[in-house]
Amino acid sequence: MSDEVSTHPKATGADRLPGDPGRDEMVARMIRVDHAGEYGAARIYAGQLAVLGKRPVGDTIRHMAEQEQKHLDAFDELVAERRVRPTVLSPVWHAAGFALGAVTAAMGERAAMACTVAVEEVIADHYADQAARLGEDETELREMIEEFREDEIGHKDTGLEHDAELTPGYRLLSQVIKAGSRTAIWLSTRY
Image (cartoon, rainbow, N blue to C red; front, side, top):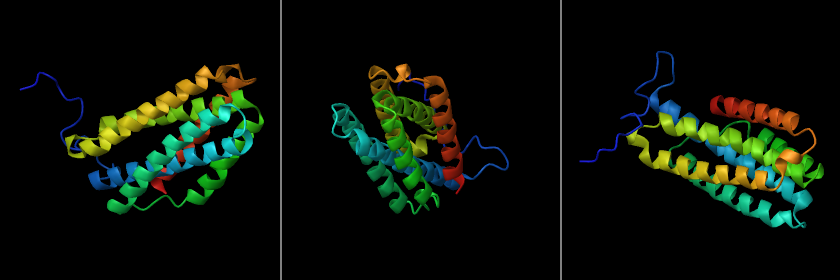
C-alpha cells in the first residue's frame, strides 16, 4: 500500500454546496469552457501568425499554435464523446481571439509575447483549479488537464524568454488581457 495521499476528492462534486451544479453539469461545464479556451487560444495564435508568421519568431508561435491545436482536438473529441454542448459564444471567440492575436502582434513581437504570457497565466491557474476539483472518478480528464497545463506554463515561459515584460505598457496590457480571459472563462462556462 502506498504512503502517498491523494489530494483529489474521491468523487467529483463530492464537496459541492447546495445550489452548485451537480457532478455531471460541473464536468460538462469544465469540458465546455476548456474547449472554448483552446479554440480561443488557437485563434490568438492564428492572428499572431498572420502578422508575424514570416519573422523568426513565427516558428516559436507556430510551435505553440500546434500544441494548442492538439489540445483543441482532444476537447473536440470529449465534446462529442460526452455530448457536451459547446459554448454558443464560439463565433465571438473566433473573431475576438484572432483580433487579439493580430493586434498584439501588430504592436510588435514583445507585445505578442505579452499577450501569450497573460492568457497562459490565466489558463494555467484555471486548469489547476479544475484539476483540484476532479475526483478519482475523473482521473483521465484530470491527467489531460494537468498535461495541457504544463504546455500552457511552457508557453508563458516562452513569452517571458522573448522579453514580453519589456513591452511598453506591459502591466496595463497584461491586466486588460487577463481580465478579458477571465470574463471569457466565466461566460463560456455558462453559455
